[in-house]
Image (cartoon, rainbow, N blue to C red; front, side, top):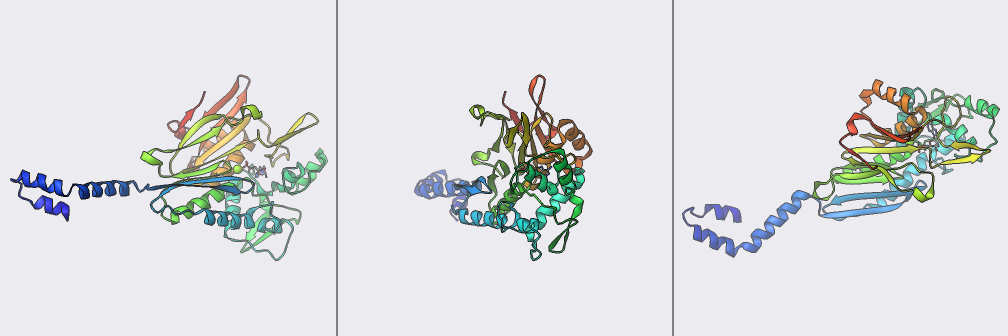
Amino acid sequence: MLLLDYLLLPADLPSRRKAFVKTHFGFILFTFLAFFSSCQNKTHFMKLEGRAQGTTYRILYFCEDSLSYKEQADSLLRQLDQSLSTYNPGSIISRINRNDSTVMVDHHFIQVFNKSMEVAERTDGSFDITVAPIVNAYGFGFTEKQNINSAVIDSLLRLVDYKMVQLKGMKLTKANPRIMLDFNAIAQGYSVDVLASYLENKGIEDYLVELGGEVKAKGTKENDEPWRVGIDRPEESIATEGTLQGVVKLKNKAMATSGNYKRYYEENGQKYAHIIDPSTGYPAKHNMLSASVITTDCMTADAYATAFMVMGVEKSKSFLAKNRDLGIDVFFIYEDDAGLKTYMSEGLRTLIQEIP
Ligand code: AMP
Ligand code: MG
């Protein structure tokens, strides 16, 4: 109304316009500030932090009302744990692993199971959630470590094949009761997606969700700056832990990283790492040190990051060339005779800044 009054003043009366501005200066200034801050839609910056799934989470977002969703995030994470965690004896996956005949799957289980089957098909079993008995035997799972020898591995390998499990309605069927499932290579990514869509349903358009290193970011930070996420340099030594190999600008994308350099042990001079090649039953062994995958959802990124650790650099590159329709980008850190090397797919060239 005030602007209309101003415009309606006769144009040949500049002095009356000047006087008008003088009288209403405070109000005009307030209106301008309010207008610009509402355009930004970034009145409040919120940071939620906590622990879940044996790791930490961080949720950063901008909003107009400074509402904290910490309790809701914790409650969602507990719900996910009740479905997908092999470390929670009462969860749906644990009850399926114990062959509890009364257990029915839930929405979360179905989402993660279906994606696991899709990635297993695409990667010809490099990603396989039925790898659980072998992960357990090496001591990286939810049961006691066993004494490993080739006979043990061969007998356990008979229980590993994603084609031997199926969802029929709300029930999971197994070809052999000794088959067990492990969602640890995909559940964190899925949890990030669940938290992100919760924020989106609350009308939040600028956020970053991070759980155990898996991330999803939407919109921008203050001043329209992109969210930036670091990729760790694969270091086994505590002294050099925490240094970065690169920084990625993430906009409306998710990123997950898999690496064999953090979870491993040595026994009789032999190194055992937690990512298993389901075709051999032995830990994936080659020069790939860390695989980061960037795509629209974190569950897909998480599953493929693990699959690429199994495939190694060369096989992963030819897989990517044949599967362009997946729309995934990768950043690999690997080792050759000359030392650490990196590879990035075309789509990342303008988004990754490597640190020498
Ligand atoms: P991530 O850190 O996402 O790569 O997940 C690694 C975890 O996934 C391991 O600790 C195992 O519990 C499980 N895992 C190991 N090998 C495989 C595999 N080939 N396919 C699916 N899950 C796996
Ligand atoms: Mg993974």
